[in-house]
Image 1: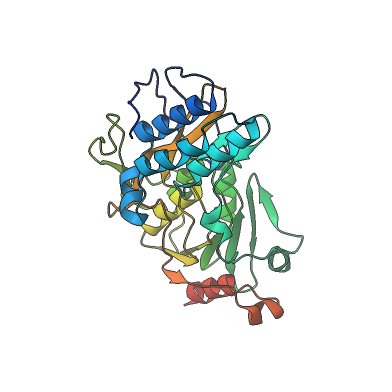
Image 2: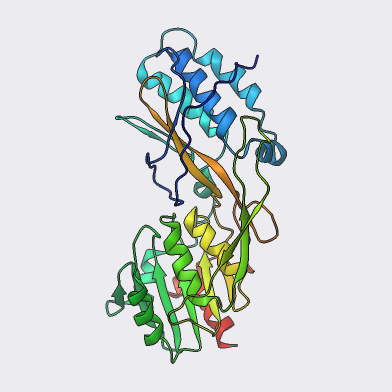
Length: 343
């Protein structure tokens, strides 16, 4: 049985892709009863009418959102404690397999982390300390140094960490003698999309098509606008014209996934490491009758070939950390990128 659709009052888009939940944008649903059944109904409707990947995920792994409703309405029947209801609703949202989907309460935070938990980390803090030592430079959210083979290395842990144009000018000017740069965004879970664009623009030499986006136009699963092209413009400040390698792993998500997509469209950049974690939906939020906040993907993003990157991006050079290299104090992914840049 499919519940009767409900019309939202407001729908405000977020301007950034982030990993952590925000509530600056919301969809306020017509109030249902604050009961386990009413809250499940409200949550199901929000996803049914506004979530942007239902058709895509039905195609990818057979998601049937109507069947999900029938499955979880049974679990929500009767009197449930708040913790029991939270478990039911969290399990229902996990069916979407989306790291941008969260349920927030004052007591807990439901999240889907299998997009990286079930894969090798391909990053070692102890190895990074060996490469970076204690004398690396820091410019806002960027940590950087020049390796002994004249390869520049930039570590950017989160796109939530701001950086100014002056910071980027100083970093790139410092690395001008280098023959190439490594940008290590492994385990970067996302942040501010404008930071991703700002950094990528330093490696862009001409206006470049990097992807597309759509917007929901109605409550139907397939109700979307035409694909709108997205372009990356070259920075008006110092730009890098020589080769660059971007290091990725499964924990690269959201704005970091978008940055990977931008760089993959540039001719001087190569992606090295593991498949990224994805997260290609711009998130919105809504409130349930009991006051709990749900965040979900509402605006789908695509790469320059019109392919969804919701489940991640393949590297140009797939490389895994090896145990043999680890025992020798070497990071396999960094070493591969250094050799690639040296060529």
